[in-house]
Length: 452
Image (cartoon, rainbow, N blue to C red; front, side, top):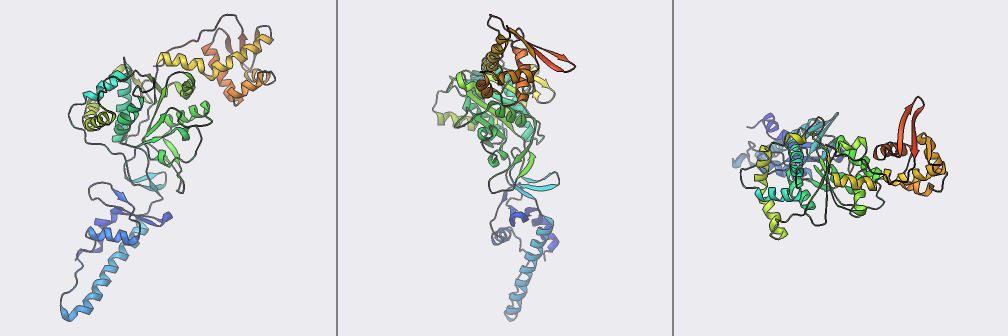
């Protein structure tokens, strides 16, 4: 007869109790993590029965002992069931159940909490084959040295999730003309390579919602232009991008569910059209974010001769071959070497110039020049003094559209000294930094260098 210990060794690891929701969870597979919510205790017992949970309990077939045999049989069934469930509820408990982006299904420990992840990233088995179709698309979409930069970024992200090592990586930003193939890059390359866990991140990144349960379960955080975002704030967005890149610890809070702060293995990608207001989707290029971005400028893909469904189907079919190729791909050493993120940061020079011309610093400069004009072309003071002067000037309305705090104003003044050193200089004194503003009739030239 099968003992209780034998039953426990076989089925115990496959059943978890979540007391907060008074629920059992069951691993329906004996060879991999495939956790399900059976719904009720009765349904759980049905799953166990089908798996052989009651094997070894036999009813006597002797007609003379039928009544006694039935009683003994039911008592043995009840004893096995009750002892097993009691042991699960005391020894196999978790404090949170859900999904974490990029993390494999199964039991994990976060701080002092035992958690159960029901699902994880899924990858096809890499297999040698032809992936030239996808590589041709990448070469056309990201000309020059940009495709190697993307592939180096993608390989690091893929291995961080596949190997569960969790290394972080820069945010990838791809800008180009409408219908050039940017969304194809997100949906048919990045999302499947990162385990097929993609989610739209824009509303969370601009602070429109604190509920991020879907994002918490995603390894690929996606932004495709601003969508329906209302009240977009570039500074809020920039700060959120920095955090998403540099800090895997994320507070996850879904509606009607328990919150948790846990590490997510993820990457953030942003695709956008070039020109005009679209450039606002690029984060402010400050010193603390420059190393956290890879910004590429794409061309239009011309090799997509089939219909959209046909092209998508081919990319899906080629994915095992692409993963096999990617695992063997050796990134160009020129694009590697960042000690924190592996790949070098990069900002396409054309996009960098366009960003700087529309940045908050560029918008602030005319107000600074007006202030200096009031003082016969030269003004010197601390950031606080300059800020106070502007608040008391007719420029106050425009200032408050650009700057939300004295801290942000100070950062922008420092940025202006780097972008327009012929107009604004900074010197350190024992009483703090002082800025000297000199207005000339010449149009200032933006100082620009390529990051990476």
